Image (cartoon, rainbow, N blue to C red; front, side):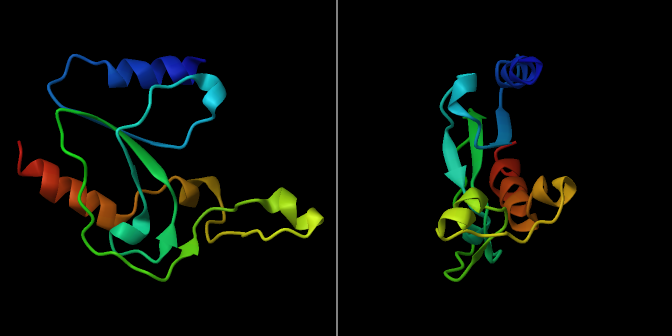
Length: 117
């Protein structure tokens, strides 16, 4: 609940423009609906890793280089392995790798939002 309070404080800060990036939260935390959902493969990286953006007075990011062949960056449905379902072990091997912002996304943020400032 402390993390939720911190997130909401950032989102509601007295700033003209705000961009909060966060992975998909569990619904139980009741966070506000995100403004946009982005994927690394929309910005030149051969991976999927859904990331949400909450934006205040900033336009949604426009994709810069869509890659059509990509792999999951994070593990998914690993519990389904025992049940014979498809799953992915992902590319990321630790929490530090999992939390990275891809350079193509950061570049798009800098170029598209920096021009507004």
